[in-house]
Structure formats: structure tokens, C-alpha cells
Length: 295
View 1 (cartoon, one colour):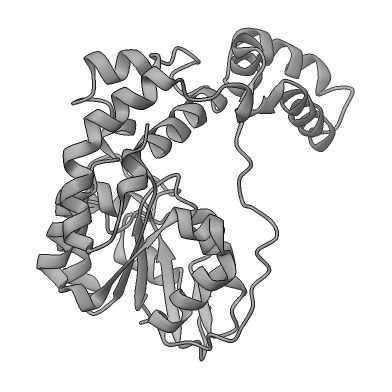
View 2: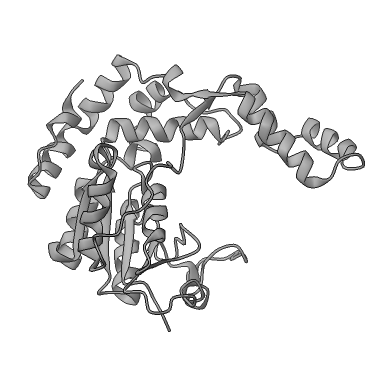
């Protein structure tokens, strides 16, 4: 039975998909073919309504690593493990207690905004996304995209549960600045050949936002109009052609996220919201995070 000996535990919107792809290129590393298994996130066995698509049993989890052969490092990446730190740490201790843990952290204000744009892009909530300003002001204690930026308590918990030697923390800023050196440092932590050079030229996700939220929701979510059009076209065009048309329309309706920058007021509100946590994290990591406090 093969299980991972390293896990990327977080965090979302901090380059974890790109890093997963870079790790997957290394000949001495085997990555789960499913990026976000989420198996160690919660006690799936105690929850009803399991589905075939979920990795909700140890058997399903082990199957992900059956393809591993003589690789030195076997891993998976589930960024929610940091957010759900209490349940995730318990399950990691139960199933893979000696696994090396990796956390990639991003400026929490930038992370929250990137998460917010992703919700708009993917029409989460049928496109009725509460504005970021409203979430900061009225729902900060409830909003997952804001709460995921408080890193201090989750990391402190992991350090106490596993010891600092078992965990390496990296910064998204360093990935953007020099992705080659960033990966070499990670290779050294995993004990694989650090002279290997991954192709880091391609970014996994290019952040975009829709020009029209109404059209974006229409194209991405199931609705009567989309169903009617699809029903009529199925007799004329094959499935692949219909999917390509939909993808092209989504792309035409997309624009670079730079057209919708984080406002100065929202940035200031987020920085103030995260300030105390950033200062505590800075002491915990013994690393200068003052740039995260810049407005």
C-alpha cells in the first residue's frame, strides 16, 4: 500500500496548481493524478451521501498512488488542508504521520481578492457574488475567502502537531520572483535531485474576469435558455464542437483581471483586517512580511 510522503497543505490562490505541475515534471517525484484529493480534510467515513467522484475512502486514496514506482517523493496537493487545519492535521497524523508538509503563503489581501475574482469568473453562487467591500465590512467572520487569509493559527497548530522540521513554508512572492530557485529549494526539502530544471514558462491559471457577468453566468451555469439551445444544437453539431463553441464564447467574454484592480480602499481595509495576524505570523516564521502591510 503506497501513500504520500509529502503533502502541499495550502493555500488556495497561491500558485499551488503551478507548483503541482512543476513537481510532476521531476523524474524522482510522483504526484497524485488528482490534484486536490481532499481525503485528509475531514472524516468522510462519517458523512452521508458519498459519491463516486469523491476520494472518501482509504481505498480510493491509495489507488491514486498505485502508479508510483521507484520515485523518491510521492505527493499530493490539497490547499484546503491548511484552512481545515484541525481535522486535516488529525487525519494526516492518522494516515501519513511522517509526511513532509509544504505550505505556500500569499499576501492575504491579494489572496482574498484573487479568490473573489475566481468566484466571479466561475459564476459561483449563480453570479450573485456579494461585493468584496461588503464581505470585508459585514461578513469577514463568515466569508471563507477572507478567513482563509488568516495563516497564523493554522500554521502554529501544524508546527505544534508535527514540529517545524517536518514543515517548510514558502512565499508566493518568491515563486513569482524566481520560480526556478523556488523549485530548487523545494526539491532539496523533498530530498530529490535539485539540479533538475522544470519548465516554469507556463502558468497554470491566467486570472481573468468576465466582461458581462450576465453572459458569463448564462454560459457557465445550467439554466433553461442554455438547455434549450443545447437541445436544439445536439442534432446539428457533435458534443465536442458544442463544447468548443461554449469555451470560445467564454473566452470572448473574458478580460485580464488588471481591468478590475483591487481598490485602494479595499486594500486598506484588508490590510487592517489582517495586520495583527501578519505580525504574529512574521514572528512565527522569523521572516520579514512587512511588504504585506503596505497599502
